[in-house]
Image 1 (cartoon, rainbow, N blue to C red):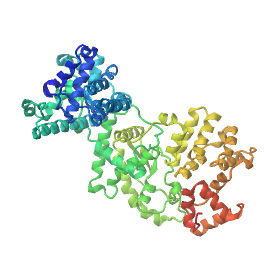
Image 2 (image 1 turned 90 degrees about the horizontal axis):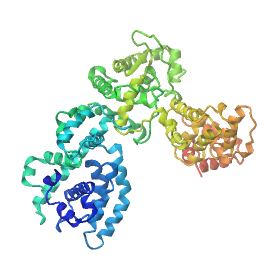
Image 3 (image 1 turned 90 degrees about the vertical axis):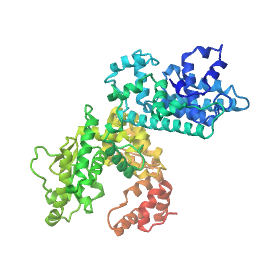
Image 4 (image 1 turned 45 degrees about the vertical axis):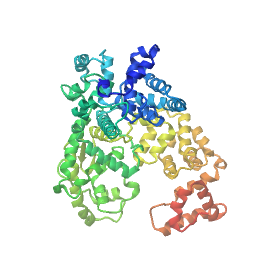
Length: 599
């Protein structure tokens, strides 16, 4: 029991002061008081007057950080915890009560969200909640022992992974152990007048025993013994998740690509929902670690990158030859880097580099010949060996020159991404996003998965004029001044505008960003469109986006700009000014290399 581990928390004094009040006879309030006063004392609250002083900064920490980490409370009991803090603050003179009341008012919504957030669950808190649902008396260790076996195979809340609970549990254990150790040292260095928090007997038992006793009191009696003994399989620890090493490598890859784990990767077209992702992740890790051996040089160490890159393509198959060419620093047309390749059926035998015409198609380099193919053969075969070793897990496929993730492999890599809190939505989840969120994400994806997801989003809404108008607004006005505006506008050309309701396209003519795009789409359908409605800014942006930004000699790129300026009212100066006003970031990036200065 916590009260026999943490002494002199002021609990008895506090409850005595409430004698006669309804709280004193409320078990939920008494249990909350034990936890709140104990945590305040552990965190160093001044106990000189016999009660831990609820300093505002400690109050918020206990409510928002500590209680959601260490304490299980059913939803109906949550209000007792802020009530304890308020009652405690009322026992102190001066302005403290008012200051604490303000902190509590501000913190209560965060406290309630944190206490009910599945992402904050630990093994102790989760099994305490399950034990309560099967009628266990959480204060009775014998009842807990009798009933816990019935929880075998209990599913976790939606979206929560076993690795999440393991990581949260490990963190909570560390934080609580540190708090206990600091409290002991603090009291040893400056013995408080109210007496020490920890008895010599408790200290002799060790910090681990103390924290276990506290967690049992704050969740379910005897639970630690069950989760470390007969039912240890219910609460796996870090050693049971070796594949987190691979998850860390994929997190590094994601940060290299996007710099932010909250930026989502595109969803796969197909996922194996029945996949045993933890076991498959361990198998994938074994293959990755084997490939890191010297015999698999030079590409064996690239296995985590290959897995991430395949997923980041929406799990569309890639070309071994094209990927090998990129590793060898060959010039690959940027427009072709992420183009999916067909997966041939019934291909057997070893790897063979594609014939020259196919290499030209894959790389976008017209001058390739047999000598080039021969130079690429060695690197491509080395890369194919890596793909084949990964394919031996059943999570990757390699057929001819194509390699990619199987649906089971896509589910496994998605699991590894989610373990490290990387946004990895499913196709269903992206189809449910608001248009502006979808567009912001799709603008950072390769075009093939972006086109698929945008089409799915429209299909999920029946392709109505309202859906098209919402999406077009997100492509245009909503992201008018975003730094990635050009990438957002490029999504327009991924849409099947031939299927768009004409009213939605006509409504977009006045958009200051994509008005000229809408005009072109209507004209391509042979429909009437009032060009006068298109704003000058939209016309300038369409010209800007049509200029070669990365390809071709500077001379030809400058010639393209000069040709556009010749047809622009007011000439080049007026065109540059209109471009800069509409999208200064893109204008500088495109025009700067051409020697054109922005006003």
